[in-house]
Image (cartoon, rainbow, N blue to C red; front, side, top):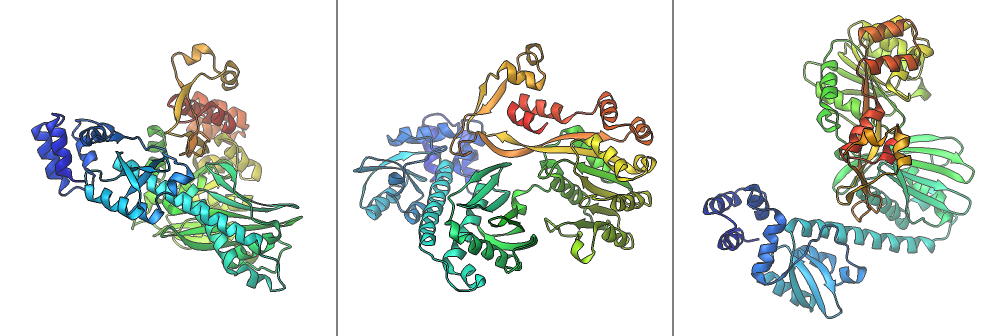
Length: 555
Protein backbone atom coordinates (compact mmCIF):
# COMPACT_ATOMS: atom_id res chain seq x y z
CA UNK A 1 0.00 0.00 0.00
CA UNK A 2 1.27 3.45 -0.94
CA UNK A 3 2.60 4.83 2.36
CA UNK A 4 2.57 8.42 1.12
CA UNK A 5 -1.14 8.31 0.20
CA UNK A 6 -2.11 6.78 3.56
CA UNK A 7 -0.11 9.41 5.44
CA UNK A 8 -1.70 12.21 3.36
CA UNK A 9 -5.22 10.87 4.07
CA UNK A 10 -4.67 10.77 7.83
CA UNK A 11 -2.75 14.06 7.95
CA UNK A 12 -5.55 15.79 6.02
CA UNK A 13 -8.01 14.54 8.65
CA UNK A 14 -5.63 15.91 11.32
CA UNK A 15 -5.24 12.42 12.72
CA UNK A 16 -1.48 12.60 12.38
CA UNK A 17 0.69 15.53 13.40
CA UNK A 18 3.35 16.79 11.01
CA UNK A 19 6.02 15.29 13.26
CA UNK A 20 4.28 11.89 13.32
CA UNK A 21 3.74 11.96 9.57
CA UNK A 22 7.39 12.74 8.95
CA UNK A 23 8.50 9.99 11.37
CA UNK A 24 6.30 7.38 9.68
CA UNK A 25 7.41 8.47 6.21
CA UNK A 26 11.08 8.14 7.16
CA UNK A 27 10.59 4.72 8.73
CA UNK A 28 8.51 3.35 5.85
CA UNK A 29 11.51 3.37 3.53
CA UNK A 30 13.58 1.00 5.68
CA UNK A 31 11.17 -0.86 7.97
CA UNK A 32 9.72 -4.31 7.22
CA UNK A 33 6.52 -3.30 9.05
CA UNK A 34 3.46 -2.31 7.02
CA UNK A 35 2.34 1.31 6.99
CA UNK A 36 -0.55 0.65 9.40
CA UNK A 37 1.78 -0.80 12.05
CA UNK A 38 4.17 2.13 11.73
CA UNK A 39 1.25 4.49 12.39
CA UNK A 40 0.12 2.38 15.36
CA UNK A 41 3.65 2.56 16.79
CA UNK A 42 3.35 6.37 17.00
CA UNK A 43 0.43 5.96 19.40
CA UNK A 44 -1.87 8.01 17.19
CA UNK A 45 -4.49 5.28 16.62
CA UNK A 46 -5.04 1.54 16.34
CA UNK A 47 -4.99 -0.54 13.13
CA UNK A 48 -8.77 -0.70 12.80
CA UNK A 49 -9.01 3.10 12.85
CA UNK A 50 -6.35 3.42 10.14
CA UNK A 51 -8.29 1.23 7.72
CA UNK A 52 -11.65 2.70 8.71
CA UNK A 53 -10.46 6.17 7.62
CA UNK A 54 -8.97 4.78 4.40
CA UNK A 55 -12.37 3.22 3.66
CA UNK A 56 -14.19 6.47 4.47
CA UNK A 57 -11.83 8.43 2.23
CA UNK A 58 -12.47 6.05 -0.68
CA UNK A 59 -16.21 5.88 -0.03
CA UNK A 60 -16.03 2.12 0.60
CA UNK A 61 -17.28 -0.19 3.34
CA UNK A 62 -14.85 -1.29 6.05
CA UNK A 63 -14.89 -4.99 7.01
CA UNK A 64 -13.41 -6.84 9.97
CA UNK A 65 -12.10 -10.13 8.51
CA UNK A 66 -10.96 -11.67 11.78
CA UNK A 67 -12.13 -15.28 11.63
CA UNK A 68 -13.76 -14.59 8.22
CA UNK A 69 -15.13 -17.90 6.87
CA UNK A 70 -17.10 -17.41 3.64
CA UNK A 71 -19.32 -20.11 2.18
CA UNK A 72 -17.86 -22.51 -0.37
CA UNK A 73 -19.65 -20.79 -3.31
CA UNK A 74 -18.12 -17.44 -2.32
CA UNK A 75 -14.61 -18.94 -2.04
CA UNK A 76 -15.08 -20.58 -5.45
CA UNK A 77 -15.74 -17.16 -7.04
CA UNK A 78 -11.99 -16.43 -6.95
CA UNK A 79 -9.56 -19.28 -7.78
CA UNK A 80 -6.83 -19.77 -5.20
CA UNK A 81 -4.00 -18.75 -7.55
CA UNK A 82 -5.84 -15.57 -8.57
CA UNK A 83 -6.66 -14.67 -4.97
CA UNK A 84 -3.01 -14.99 -3.98
CA UNK A 85 -1.78 -13.07 -7.03
CA UNK A 86 -4.00 -10.06 -6.41
CA UNK A 87 -4.11 -10.47 -2.60
CA UNK A 88 -7.88 -10.47 -2.81
CA UNK A 89 -10.31 -12.09 -0.36
CA UNK A 90 -13.93 -12.73 -1.40
CA UNK A 91 -16.31 -11.28 1.20
CA UNK A 92 -19.79 -11.72 -0.31
CA UNK A 93 -21.43 -12.77 -3.59
CA UNK A 94 -25.07 -12.32 -4.60
CA UNK A 95 -24.75 -14.12 -7.91
CA UNK A 96 -24.07 -10.91 -9.82
CA UNK A 97 -21.74 -8.70 -7.80
CA UNK A 98 -18.69 -10.04 -5.95
CA UNK A 99 -17.59 -8.07 -2.89
CA UNK A 100 -13.79 -8.22 -2.54
CA UNK A 101 -11.31 -6.97 0.04
CA UNK A 102 -7.97 -5.98 -1.50
CA UNK A 103 -4.67 -5.71 0.33
CA UNK A 104 -4.07 -2.46 -1.55
CA UNK A 105 -7.43 -0.73 -2.17
CA UNK A 106 -5.59 2.47 -3.15
CA UNK A 107 -4.28 0.85 -6.33
CA UNK A 108 -7.13 1.16 -8.83
CA UNK A 109 -5.17 -0.81 -11.44
CA UNK A 110 -5.25 -3.95 -9.25
CA UNK A 111 -9.03 -3.81 -8.96
CA UNK A 112 -9.41 -3.28 -12.71
CA UNK A 113 -7.08 -6.20 -13.55
CA UNK A 114 -8.83 -8.51 -11.08
CA UNK A 115 -12.27 -7.68 -12.49
CA UNK A 116 -10.99 -8.39 -16.01
CA UNK A 117 -9.37 -11.68 -14.93
CA UNK A 118 -12.58 -12.90 -13.29
CA UNK A 119 -14.95 -11.46 -15.89
CA UNK A 120 -16.97 -10.33 -12.93
CA UNK A 121 -18.48 -7.11 -11.60
CA UNK A 122 -16.66 -6.24 -8.39
CA UNK A 123 -17.60 -4.23 -5.33
CA UNK A 124 -14.50 -3.22 -3.39
CA UNK A 125 -14.22 -2.93 0.37
CA UNK A 126 -11.39 -2.18 2.80
CA UNK A 127 -9.97 -4.51 5.44
CA UNK A 128 -6.83 -4.75 7.52
CA UNK A 129 -3.98 -5.92 5.27
CA UNK A 130 -2.79 -8.39 7.90
CA UNK A 131 -6.29 -9.87 8.19
CA UNK A 132 -6.43 -10.24 4.40
CA UNK A 133 -3.16 -12.16 4.28
CA UNK A 134 -4.26 -14.35 7.21
CA UNK A 135 -7.60 -15.03 5.52
CA UNK A 136 -5.91 -16.01 2.25
CA UNK A 137 -3.74 -18.53 4.09
CA UNK A 138 -6.64 -19.86 6.12
CA UNK A 139 -9.34 -20.01 3.45
CA UNK A 140 -7.41 -21.30 0.48
CA UNK A 141 -4.91 -23.62 2.14
CA UNK A 142 -7.68 -25.26 4.15
CA UNK A 143 -10.01 -25.34 1.22
CA UNK A 144 -7.48 -26.87 -1.14
CA UNK A 145 -6.50 -29.46 1.45
CA UNK A 146 -10.11 -30.44 2.04
CA UNK A 147 -10.80 -30.71 -1.66
CA UNK A 148 -7.74 -32.84 -2.28
CA UNK A 149 -8.61 -35.07 0.67
CA UNK A 150 -12.15 -35.62 -0.64
CA UNK A 151 -10.79 -36.43 -4.11
CA UNK A 152 -8.27 -38.95 -2.82
CA UNK A 153 -10.85 -40.59 -0.53
CA UNK A 154 -13.06 -41.01 -3.57
CA UNK A 155 -10.18 -42.68 -5.43
CA UNK A 156 -9.43 -44.99 -2.49
CA UNK A 157 -13.01 -46.30 -2.47
CA UNK A 158 -12.48 -47.60 -5.99
CA UNK A 159 -9.29 -49.49 -5.13
CA UNK A 160 -9.70 -53.23 -4.70
CA UNK A 161 -7.16 -55.41 -2.96
CA UNK A 162 -4.91 -57.13 -5.50
CA UNK A 163 -2.62 -60.12 -5.45
CA UNK A 164 0.43 -57.84 -5.39
CA UNK A 165 2.76 -57.97 -2.42
CA UNK A 166 2.16 -55.58 0.48
CA UNK A 167 5.03 -53.31 -0.41
CA UNK A 168 3.83 -52.79 -4.00
CA UNK A 169 0.34 -51.89 -2.82
CA UNK A 170 1.74 -49.60 -0.12
CA UNK A 171 3.78 -47.69 -2.71
CA UNK A 172 0.86 -47.13 -5.09
CA UNK A 173 0.25 -43.47 -5.96
CA UNK A 174 -3.18 -43.01 -4.24
CA UNK A 175 -1.96 -44.54 -0.97
CA UNK A 176 1.22 -42.44 -1.00
CA UNK A 177 -0.73 -39.25 -1.67
CA UNK A 178 -3.29 -40.08 0.98
CA UNK A 179 -0.68 -40.54 3.73
CA UNK A 180 1.04 -37.31 2.66
CA UNK A 181 -2.26 -35.41 2.94
CA UNK A 182 -3.05 -36.92 6.33
CA UNK A 183 0.31 -35.83 7.73
CA UNK A 184 0.13 -32.40 6.08
CA UNK A 185 -3.27 -31.87 7.68
CA UNK A 186 -1.88 -33.02 11.03
CA UNK A 187 0.86 -30.39 10.78
CA UNK A 188 -1.64 -27.71 9.76
CA UNK A 189 -3.84 -28.52 12.77
CA UNK A 190 -0.86 -28.49 15.15
CA UNK A 191 -1.30 -32.15 16.11
CA UNK A 192 1.10 -33.79 18.54
CA UNK A 193 0.07 -37.36 17.60
CA UNK A 194 -1.66 -39.13 14.72
CA UNK A 195 -3.55 -42.37 15.49
CA UNK A 196 -4.36 -45.06 12.91
CA UNK A 197 -6.81 -47.47 14.56
CA UNK A 198 -8.31 -50.60 12.92
CA UNK A 199 -11.68 -51.92 14.11
CA UNK A 200 -13.98 -54.64 12.79
CA UNK A 201 -16.15 -52.37 10.66
CA UNK A 202 -14.10 -49.19 10.30
CA UNK A 203 -10.60 -47.75 10.19
CA UNK A 204 -10.30 -44.60 12.30
CA UNK A 205 -7.74 -41.84 11.96
CA UNK A 206 -7.55 -39.36 14.83
CA UNK A 207 -5.39 -36.34 15.66
CA UNK A 208 -4.42 -35.21 19.14
CA UNK A 209 -4.50 -31.43 19.24
CA UNK A 210 -3.85 -29.61 22.53
CA UNK A 211 -4.29 -32.86 24.42
CA UNK A 212 -7.70 -33.78 22.93
CA UNK A 213 -8.42 -36.31 20.16
CA UNK A 214 -10.34 -35.33 17.00
CA UNK A 215 -11.50 -37.74 14.31
CA UNK A 216 -11.06 -37.11 10.60
CA UNK A 217 -12.80 -38.65 7.61
CA UNK A 218 -11.89 -42.35 7.59
CA UNK A 219 -10.52 -44.26 4.59
CA UNK A 220 -12.14 -47.52 3.39
CA UNK A 221 -11.70 -50.23 6.02
CA UNK A 222 -10.44 -52.79 3.48
CA UNK A 223 -7.32 -50.64 2.91
CA UNK A 224 -6.29 -50.54 6.56
CA UNK A 225 -3.42 -53.04 6.16
CA UNK A 226 -2.21 -51.28 3.01
CA UNK A 227 -2.15 -47.87 4.74
CA UNK A 228 -0.35 -49.32 7.76
CA UNK A 229 2.15 -51.02 5.44
CA UNK A 230 2.85 -47.67 3.77
CA UNK A 231 3.70 -46.11 7.14
CA UNK A 232 5.94 -49.09 8.00
CA UNK A 233 7.76 -48.77 4.67
CA UNK A 234 8.37 -45.08 5.32
CA UNK A 235 9.78 -45.80 8.80
CA UNK A 236 11.90 -48.81 7.72
CA UNK A 237 9.90 -51.37 9.72
CA UNK A 238 9.30 -55.01 8.81
CA UNK A 239 5.99 -54.98 6.92
CA UNK A 240 5.71 -58.77 7.05
CA UNK A 241 5.84 -58.83 10.86
CA UNK A 242 2.39 -58.11 12.30
CA UNK A 243 2.53 -60.20 15.47
CA UNK A 244 4.79 -58.05 17.68
CA UNK A 245 5.07 -54.30 18.40
CA UNK A 246 7.64 -52.33 16.44
CA UNK A 247 9.17 -48.89 16.86
CA UNK A 248 10.64 -46.73 14.14
CA UNK A 249 11.22 -43.22 12.92
CA UNK A 250 10.70 -41.31 9.70
CA UNK A 251 11.37 -37.85 8.34
CA UNK A 252 9.13 -35.96 5.93
CA UNK A 253 9.36 -32.54 4.33
CA UNK A 254 6.10 -30.74 5.03
CA UNK A 255 5.47 -27.03 4.46
CA UNK A 256 9.13 -26.55 3.45
CA UNK A 257 10.52 -27.97 6.70
CA UNK A 258 11.73 -31.38 7.82
CA UNK A 259 9.50 -32.99 10.43
CA UNK A 260 10.40 -36.11 12.42
CA UNK A 261 7.80 -38.70 13.31
CA UNK A 262 8.25 -41.35 15.97
CA UNK A 263 6.36 -44.47 14.89
CA UNK A 264 4.92 -47.15 17.17
CA UNK A 265 2.94 -50.20 15.99
CA UNK A 266 0.79 -52.47 18.18
CA UNK A 267 -0.91 -55.72 17.08
CA UNK A 268 -4.67 -55.76 17.77
CA UNK A 269 -7.57 -58.11 17.07
CA UNK A 270 -8.30 -56.38 13.72
CA UNK A 271 -4.82 -55.46 12.52
CA UNK A 272 -2.06 -53.15 13.65
CA UNK A 273 -2.70 -49.91 15.51
CA UNK A 274 -0.12 -47.24 14.67
CA UNK A 275 0.62 -44.01 16.51
CA UNK A 276 2.86 -41.30 15.06
CA UNK A 277 4.33 -38.77 17.49
CA UNK A 278 5.00 -35.47 15.67
CA UNK A 279 8.43 -34.14 16.57
CA UNK A 280 8.37 -30.69 15.00
CA UNK A 281 11.10 -28.61 16.60
CA UNK A 282 9.71 -25.41 15.14
CA UNK A 283 6.50 -25.83 17.16
CA UNK A 284 8.26 -26.65 20.43
CA UNK A 285 9.78 -24.02 22.65
CA UNK A 286 13.16 -25.28 23.81
CA UNK A 287 13.93 -22.15 25.83
CA UNK A 288 13.31 -21.72 29.55
CA UNK A 289 11.89 -18.22 29.17
CA UNK A 290 9.12 -19.55 26.90
CA UNK A 291 7.87 -22.30 29.21
CA UNK A 292 5.56 -19.99 31.16
CA UNK A 293 7.38 -20.41 34.48
CA UNK A 294 6.75 -17.98 37.32
CA UNK A 295 9.72 -15.70 37.94
CA UNK A 296 10.67 -17.34 41.26
CA UNK A 297 10.49 -20.80 39.71
CA UNK A 298 12.50 -19.70 36.68
CA UNK A 299 15.18 -18.20 38.97
CA UNK A 300 15.37 -21.43 40.99
CA UNK A 301 15.84 -23.57 37.87
CA UNK A 302 18.42 -21.15 36.48
CA UNK A 303 20.40 -21.49 39.71
CA UNK A 304 19.99 -25.28 39.91
CA UNK A 305 21.08 -26.18 36.38
CA UNK A 306 24.46 -24.53 36.81
CA UNK A 307 25.33 -26.43 39.98
CA UNK A 308 28.34 -28.72 39.67
CA UNK A 309 26.52 -31.82 40.91
CA UNK A 310 23.21 -33.20 42.09
CA UNK A 311 20.02 -34.59 40.52
CA UNK A 312 17.14 -32.55 39.08
CA UNK A 313 13.98 -34.52 38.26
CA UNK A 314 10.92 -33.63 36.19
CA UNK A 315 7.86 -35.66 37.02
CA UNK A 316 4.36 -36.03 35.67
CA UNK A 317 2.25 -38.29 33.44
CA UNK A 318 3.02 -39.10 29.79
CA UNK A 319 2.61 -36.03 27.60
CA UNK A 320 3.10 -33.53 30.42
CA UNK A 321 6.04 -31.81 28.72
CA UNK A 322 8.80 -33.23 30.94
CA UNK A 323 11.22 -33.84 28.08
CA UNK A 324 10.63 -30.36 26.67
CA UNK A 325 11.44 -28.81 30.05
CA UNK A 326 14.67 -30.78 30.38
CA UNK A 327 15.70 -29.94 26.80
CA UNK A 328 15.15 -26.28 27.64
CA UNK A 329 17.42 -26.70 30.68
CA UNK A 330 20.11 -28.33 28.54
CA UNK A 331 19.85 -25.59 25.92
CA UNK A 332 20.45 -23.03 28.65
CA UNK A 333 23.74 -24.68 29.74
CA UNK A 334 24.88 -25.89 26.31
CA UNK A 335 28.15 -23.94 26.17
CA UNK A 336 31.54 -24.67 24.66
CA UNK A 337 33.08 -25.31 28.10
CA UNK A 338 30.55 -27.97 29.12
CA UNK A 339 30.14 -31.57 27.88
CA UNK A 340 26.53 -32.72 27.77
CA UNK A 341 25.43 -36.33 27.25
CA UNK A 342 21.87 -37.69 26.97
CA UNK A 343 20.46 -41.23 27.05
CA UNK A 344 16.96 -41.28 25.55
CA UNK A 345 14.36 -43.79 24.40
CA UNK A 346 14.11 -42.58 21.70
CA UNK A 347 16.01 -39.35 20.94
CA UNK A 348 13.16 -36.90 20.33
CA UNK A 349 14.90 -33.72 19.21
CA UNK A 350 18.37 -33.35 17.76
CA UNK A 351 20.17 -30.55 19.61
CA UNK A 352 23.47 -29.27 18.23
CA UNK A 353 26.38 -29.51 20.64
CA UNK A 354 24.89 -32.32 22.74
CA UNK A 355 25.89 -35.98 22.38
CA UNK A 356 22.63 -37.96 22.29
CA UNK A 357 22.49 -41.74 22.65
CA UNK A 358 19.35 -43.74 21.78
CA UNK A 359 18.65 -46.54 24.27
CA UNK A 360 17.94 -49.94 22.69
CA UNK A 361 16.94 -52.69 25.12
CA UNK A 362 16.70 -55.30 22.34
CA UNK A 363 20.51 -55.26 21.97
CA UNK A 364 21.22 -54.81 25.66
CA UNK A 365 21.81 -51.05 25.46
CA UNK A 366 19.77 -50.14 28.55
CA UNK A 367 19.70 -46.86 30.46
CA UNK A 368 21.94 -48.31 33.15
CA UNK A 369 24.51 -49.59 30.66
CA UNK A 370 24.61 -46.28 28.76
CA UNK A 371 24.89 -44.37 32.02
CA UNK A 372 27.89 -46.46 33.10
CA UNK A 373 29.57 -45.72 29.77
CA UNK A 374 28.79 -42.00 30.20
CA UNK A 375 30.86 -41.85 33.38
CA UNK A 376 33.93 -42.85 31.36
CA UNK A 377 33.28 -40.06 28.80
CA UNK A 378 34.25 -37.18 31.11
CA UNK A 379 30.80 -35.49 31.10
CA UNK A 380 29.74 -32.37 33.00
CA UNK A 381 25.97 -32.83 32.73
CA UNK A 382 24.00 -35.94 31.98
CA UNK A 383 20.36 -36.43 30.98
CA UNK A 384 18.79 -39.83 31.63
CA UNK A 385 15.52 -40.06 29.72
CA UNK A 386 13.76 -42.01 32.47
CA UNK A 387 14.69 -43.72 35.75
CA UNK A 388 12.94 -47.02 35.07
CA UNK A 389 14.69 -49.27 37.56
CA UNK A 390 16.78 -49.23 40.72
CA UNK A 391 20.01 -49.91 38.83
CA UNK A 392 19.62 -46.79 36.70
CA UNK A 393 18.61 -44.70 39.71
CA UNK A 394 21.58 -45.90 41.77
CA UNK A 395 24.08 -45.15 39.00
CA UNK A 396 22.53 -41.68 38.59
CA UNK A 397 22.93 -41.08 42.33
CA UNK A 398 26.56 -42.23 42.22
CA UNK A 399 27.17 -39.98 39.21
CA UNK A 400 25.77 -36.98 41.08
CA UNK A 401 27.86 -37.74 44.15
CA UNK A 402 31.04 -37.93 42.05
CA UNK A 403 30.70 -34.44 40.59
CA UNK A 404 28.09 -34.62 37.80
CA UNK A 405 24.79 -32.84 37.40
CA UNK A 406 22.11 -35.35 36.36
CA UNK A 407 18.72 -34.58 34.80
CA UNK A 408 15.99 -37.22 34.57
CA UNK A 409 12.24 -37.91 34.55
CA UNK A 410 9.89 -40.02 36.62
CA UNK A 411 6.23 -40.91 36.20
CA UNK A 412 4.56 -39.85 39.46
CA UNK A 413 1.45 -37.85 40.30
CA UNK A 414 3.25 -35.00 42.05
CA UNK A 415 6.69 -33.73 43.01
CA UNK A 416 6.86 -35.25 46.54
CA UNK A 417 5.81 -38.60 45.08
CA UNK A 418 9.09 -38.76 43.12
CA UNK A 419 11.08 -38.96 46.37
CA UNK A 420 9.16 -41.91 47.81
CA UNK A 421 9.20 -43.58 44.39
CA UNK A 422 13.04 -43.55 44.40
CA UNK A 423 13.10 -44.99 47.94
CA UNK A 424 10.51 -47.65 47.05
CA UNK A 425 12.62 -48.64 44.02
CA UNK A 426 15.43 -49.58 46.41
CA UNK A 427 17.57 -46.44 46.67
CA UNK A 428 18.93 -45.67 50.12
CA UNK A 429 17.05 -42.70 51.62
CA UNK A 430 20.21 -40.95 52.86
CA UNK A 431 21.69 -41.13 49.33
CA UNK A 432 18.49 -39.72 47.81
CA UNK A 433 18.53 -36.87 50.34
CA UNK A 434 22.22 -36.17 49.67
CA UNK A 435 22.02 -36.15 45.86
CA UNK A 436 18.58 -34.74 45.02
CA UNK A 437 18.47 -30.96 44.38
CA UNK A 438 14.86 -30.50 43.36
CA UNK A 439 11.79 -32.11 41.78
CA UNK A 440 9.59 -30.26 39.28
CA UNK A 441 6.07 -31.64 38.92
CA UNK A 442 4.18 -30.50 35.84
CA UNK A 443 1.07 -30.85 33.72
CA UNK A 444 -0.01 -29.46 30.37
CA UNK A 445 -3.49 -28.01 30.11
CA UNK A 446 -5.37 -26.24 27.34
CA UNK A 447 -5.54 -22.46 27.23
CA UNK A 448 -8.59 -20.40 26.30
CA UNK A 449 -8.76 -19.22 22.69
CA UNK A 450 -7.87 -15.52 22.49
CA UNK A 451 -10.40 -14.91 19.72
CA UNK A 452 -13.50 -16.12 21.58
CA UNK A 453 -12.58 -15.62 25.25
CA UNK A 454 -15.49 -14.26 27.27
CA UNK A 455 -16.32 -13.88 30.97
CA UNK A 456 -18.85 -16.19 32.63
CA UNK A 457 -20.22 -17.08 36.04
CA UNK A 458 -19.31 -20.61 37.15
CA UNK A 459 -21.84 -22.61 39.11
CA UNK A 460 -21.57 -23.01 42.89
CA UNK A 461 -21.09 -26.76 42.40
CA UNK A 462 -18.13 -26.19 40.07
CA UNK A 463 -16.55 -23.76 42.51
CA UNK A 464 -17.15 -26.29 45.27
CA UNK A 465 -15.09 -28.86 43.37
CA UNK A 466 -12.21 -26.38 43.46
CA UNK A 467 -12.75 -25.88 47.17
CA UNK A 468 -13.68 -22.22 46.73
CA UNK A 469 -16.37 -20.24 48.52
CA UNK A 470 -17.92 -16.90 47.43
CA UNK A 471 -15.70 -15.22 50.05
CA UNK A 472 -12.58 -16.76 48.46
CA UNK A 473 -13.57 -15.47 45.03
CA UNK A 474 -14.29 -11.89 45.96
CA UNK A 475 -14.33 -9.76 42.79
CA UNK A 476 -12.28 -12.23 40.70
CA UNK A 477 -13.42 -12.91 37.13
CA UNK A 478 -13.70 -16.24 35.34
CA UNK A 479 -13.37 -16.82 31.60
CA UNK A 480 -14.27 -19.46 29.05
CA UNK A 481 -14.05 -19.91 25.28
CA UNK A 482 -17.29 -19.54 23.34
CA UNK A 483 -15.93 -21.51 20.37
CA UNK A 484 -14.99 -20.02 17.00
CA UNK A 485 -13.40 -20.97 13.71
CA UNK A 486 -9.89 -20.22 14.97
CA UNK A 487 -10.16 -22.89 17.68
CA UNK A 488 -12.35 -25.33 15.77
CA UNK A 489 -15.31 -24.61 18.04
CA UNK A 490 -13.56 -26.01 21.13
CA UNK A 491 -12.99 -22.74 22.97
CA UNK A 492 -9.35 -23.73 23.51
CA UNK A 493 -6.20 -23.04 21.50
CA UNK A 494 -2.71 -23.95 22.63
CA UNK A 495 -1.41 -25.40 25.89
CA UNK A 496 0.69 -24.24 28.78
CA UNK A 497 2.30 -25.80 31.82
CA UNK A 498 1.27 -26.05 35.44
CA UNK A 499 4.19 -26.46 37.80
CA UNK A 500 5.02 -27.31 41.38
CA UNK A 501 8.55 -27.37 42.74
CA UNK A 502 9.82 -29.45 45.65
CA UNK A 503 13.05 -27.86 46.83
CA UNK A 504 15.15 -30.37 48.78
CA UNK A 505 15.87 -28.04 51.67
CA UNK A 506 17.43 -29.26 54.91
CA UNK A 507 14.09 -30.02 56.66
CA UNK A 508 12.89 -31.98 53.61
CA UNK A 509 16.21 -33.86 53.36
CA UNK A 510 15.91 -34.91 57.03
CA UNK A 511 12.40 -36.23 56.43
CA UNK A 512 13.58 -38.19 53.36
CA UNK A 513 16.31 -39.81 55.47
CA UNK A 514 13.63 -40.79 58.01
CA UNK A 515 11.54 -42.40 55.21
CA UNK A 516 8.64 -39.99 55.62
CA UNK A 517 5.61 -40.89 53.43
CA UNK A 518 4.56 -38.76 50.48
CA UNK A 519 1.63 -37.08 52.26
CA UNK A 520 3.90 -35.93 55.10
CA UNK A 521 6.56 -34.64 52.69
CA UNK A 522 3.89 -32.81 50.75
CA UNK A 523 2.43 -31.13 53.83
CA UNK A 524 5.88 -30.03 55.01
CA UNK A 525 6.75 -28.66 51.56
CA UNK A 526 3.50 -26.61 51.53
CA UNK A 527 4.35 -25.26 54.99
CA UNK A 528 7.75 -24.23 53.59
CA UNK A 529 6.09 -22.33 50.72
CA UNK A 530 5.67 -24.84 47.88
CA UNK A 531 3.08 -23.74 45.31
CA UNK A 532 1.05 -26.84 44.38
CA UNK A 533 -0.27 -27.73 40.94
CA UNK A 534 -3.77 -26.78 42.11
CA UNK A 535 -2.52 -23.38 43.36
CA UNK A 536 -0.79 -22.73 40.02
CA UNK A 537 -3.99 -23.79 38.28
CA UNK A 538 -6.03 -21.28 40.31
CA UNK A 539 -3.57 -18.54 39.36
CA UNK A 540 -4.04 -19.36 35.67
CA UNK A 541 -7.83 -19.38 36.10
CA UNK A 542 -7.81 -15.92 37.69
CA UNK A 543 -5.47 -14.59 34.99
CA UNK A 544 -7.90 -15.79 32.32
CA UNK A 545 -5.49 -18.31 30.79
CA UNK A 546 -7.61 -21.43 31.28
CA UNK A 547 -10.91 -22.75 32.63
CA UNK A 548 -11.99 -24.35 35.89
CA UNK A 549 -12.79 -27.59 34.04
CA UNK A 550 -9.22 -27.88 32.71
CA UNK A 551 -7.67 -27.37 36.13
CA UNK A 552 -10.01 -29.91 37.72
CA UNK A 553 -9.12 -32.41 34.99
CA UNK A 554 -5.36 -32.23 35.58
CA UNK A 555 -4.96 -31.50 39.30
